[in-house]
Length: 321
Ligand code: PBG
Image (cartoon, rainbow, N blue to C red; front, side, top):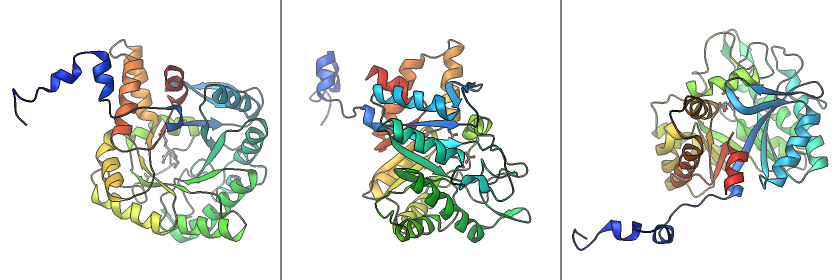
């Protein structure tokens, strides 16, 4: 296969020829819309560093969910900001916790598939993703709380449980408690390879989940490590994960590809808040074309191997597909 016998440009000459050899297509079913729920009534406040993304009270969130359904965005992942926080993050598993109420309300009003994030950082006064022992997050003590959170979400009607805490053994703990309580049909989407990333900055503002001291490096992964992601994914699959996620997405396309090639399981990728914020900021300055960058970044995340993409652009992309 050599020039001039092979000329790749032949198949790029017209739009229809290009379309004929197009390898990657996006559909609305590829996307999960992440959003935030806060206490109160009638609240819809834009997140400063994430234009076009909002924090909703439950009543407003139900309206948003109905709109998503109209746009054929069928999947939502929800993060809750509770009224009060404590060191144990107990607000995360109350029957009438913010997430539990939101899930019930949305399931009553729509057919959306509701994914709930299992983590404690939005609920703990110290902002870490687990129970502290001194200044360290105690892995095994945290597992019991995570299991309780997952169970309370399933009881509220969550369709998929998505642990994002990065404790060792959490998928097993969650799978066990779900199975023991007649929720063996509820899938687990695990944030299997979640990196300790500066790209989460805007999310932490939105979710009020910035750690009060230190950082998350003792539980989230080092961005320098690729092979370690395979070990993380292996563990989560052994423990019963149904979908494995890589996060963030765009700076980690190599990890998405490695996970896709190595395992025969659905792969999700999370285009996180910082990725979204950078595109929005660049567009606001007039330096990049927002719609084109959105389409290209999502296409490339799918091309890299993601079957499912969590993105704050879910509504915008669905409108143009
Ligand atoms: C909770 C959680 C985080 C994100 C999703 N779940 C933040 C973090 O780990 O600090 C980030 C999502 C985003 O940046 O869009 N642990």
